Length: 187
Image 1: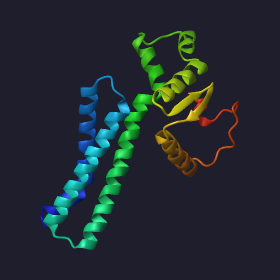
Image 2: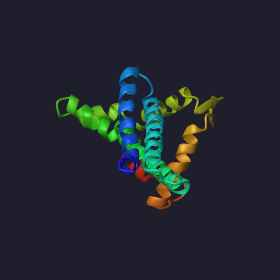
Image 3: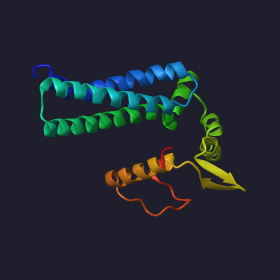
Image 4: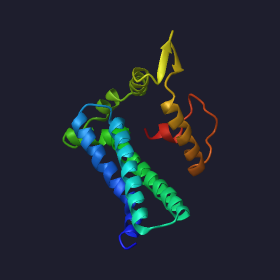
């Protein structure tokens, strides 16, 4: 019981540590691979570590079946919440146009003409690049100039994010191709 309870309590943190370390090691080993692959590997490794440490701690503490099920559920939910935070932290560095722009200005010696930045990041080019990535990854399929949903993995993620956004921010007006949303206003 003496070592079991601390192991149970610290299992989600151990899972997060394993997530971070394995994600970084995978990303360094892959070098030019898809950054989301390393994030997925990290989440799976971290989940396995959190589950294993929880199981060992529960066995050492001698909890009954009901307590073990409750602690396991709580720990795995806590780990997934921590992993979600880490995923978003890393994703911010990967996908944020604002951070990329600031880095480009810093790399140019701290000053860059506005026209140079705008020339490299006009809306059509940014959207075209994103569409090419989605088509290249099979998430969209181009059929005679019309884009059709291919793989549904990102679609599921988009639905989850839209639900969470509506919970946190509230509903937006109906989609209008010419309208400005908070996402496009500061992109």
